[in-house]
Image (cartoon, rainbow, N blue to C red; front, side, top):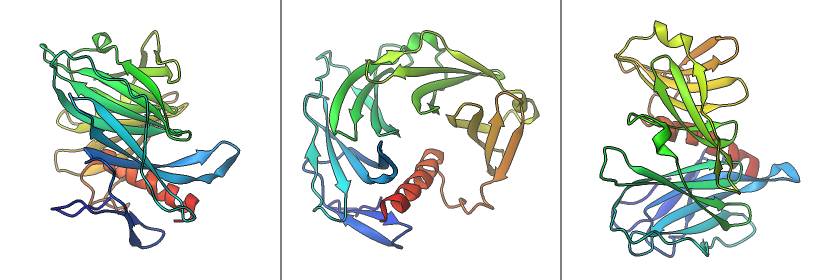
Length: 268
């Protein structure tokens, strides 16, 4: 995503087109914009690239607009209706983050509290039907007041926390019913014993057996790591050798690869 410094003009960099694709500005000033490839259930190789824009809708509330990148239809932002208002308790929003999985967008809002940690509220949007599903509050009390990792657990929105050599994971079991799992899953990470204590690790995804994380060592070298949670096998790849040395944000890097796959599927 490319914008100009003064009046925002949005373009999307497509590796497939080897060019920047211009898109119209959202109807409301955007706090952030993100995109993903939204597949069609009846055709796993079909679908479209969709963007979602988050904007402030007064009194610290948020609104959402969606745009589809379809070569046969003029680009037009569409508003999402029936978004729940926030309680008027005077608390400020410290940050927002967008997370996509399987045709669902999660707008994660970090809201200030009187304690050291923020409340985490999640708005859920169906990107296929372009409808608002609802809002859920992450049960933060089940974790310590240390760093949380936003994690894709086999397609489910999840939060994870590293506790010594264990990864504690709590997933959103059912996004349509706004239901979190009753218990945390705990994964032993024997591989951490070989790392230096100053290494920075960010966890990103886990399917049935493979946990994906990025390790930044004390010399600022980055490694993409695949850890089999059943066997303990670890495969590590130097991210400089894979051509990722110019990207400094791990989440952006992961999203970039997913986006390029989506462009290819959509023929853009």
